[in-house]
Image 1 (cartoon, rainbow, N blue to C red):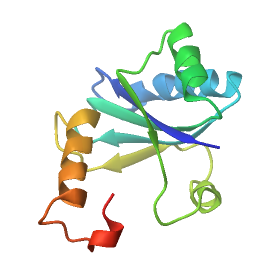
Image 2 (image 1 turned 180 degrees about the horizontal axis):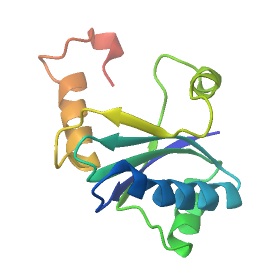
Image 3 (image 1 turned 135 degrees about the horizontal axis):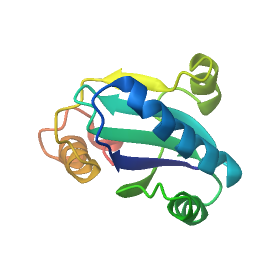
Image 4 (image 1 turned 90 degrees about the vertical axis):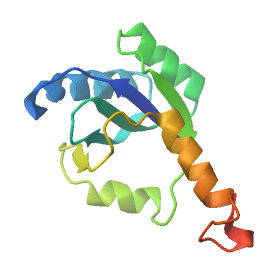
Length: 132
C-alpha cells in the first residue's frame, strides 16, 4: 500500500499534549482503512509529521479533513532502505513518538526543496545513476 506524509502545525508545550493528536490521527486513519506507520516530532514540538499507509491518498486526506484534523501539507512518500514490514516490526507497541532533531520552522516544502537540491544537484554525493 502507498505511504503518505501528513504535516501538522501543533501548539503544545509538552509531549503529553500530543497524545490526543496522535489518537485522533490514528482513529481517522484506521476508520478510513489505513494505518499509522509512525509520528515524527521535532524537538521544538511545533511540527508533527505522520507517516500513513493507505490505498488512496485523496480518500485518506478527505477522511482526515472530515474529522477535523486536516494536515497543513500532504504528500506521497516512499521508503528507502528497509521494507515496510521491517519498519512495522521495529516500531513496537503504540508508542508513536519518535524525536528527531528537525530544525525549528522546517516545513515539508522546504525539506523537499533541500532534498531535491542535494539529490539532483552537481554537488550531490550520489552517483548520477542514483539521483532522482
